Image 1: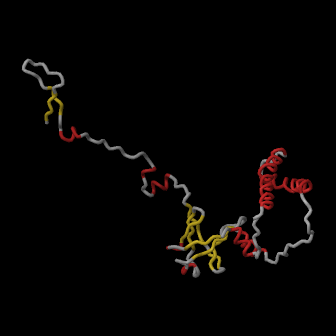
Image 2 (image 1 turned 90 degrees about the vertical axis):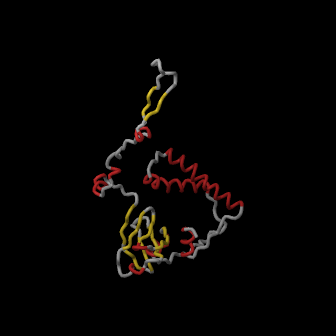
Image 3 (image 1 turned 45 degrees about the vertical axis):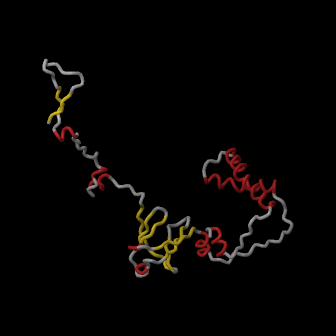
Length: 212
């Protein structure tokens, strides 16, 4: 199930898919407006950042609806009143995932290693699943059966300084690797090239004698 489907299920909202050709056409026209017309309107208005874009949208929506909106066949408002408390609503609408707690009370999320603190609740969670609540406006929360678990984060993207590398005796990154001269086979065996001469003291073309 997607995050969108999970949130609607918890709010007891049924998803009505656009199965007819007419409904799909309305969706495509709306997408074309957002991807083409709105982008051009933003450019003409000189909008170049998120804050200015958010301030521009109400007036754009009003003008757009005045020109293209069609009055509904039934004017009765069928929306149900919201009866969910705000804290619960925030938990429903945030990004949520489950993670398996491995050895040393650790698990991974978003390229980071999460290490649970050794609390009375967390000590027995090895081999269990915890739930992650990733809210937009506050830090990640790790929960198990309603308990909020404290944790610390180890990021794999952290950079290690050269000083720390040297202190850890990892000299490969501190300086160039040592180069060792490699001996040839002739140097190892002691072979030398010597020109083979004839009786008259001259050497025939290409005649070479190998000695040890």
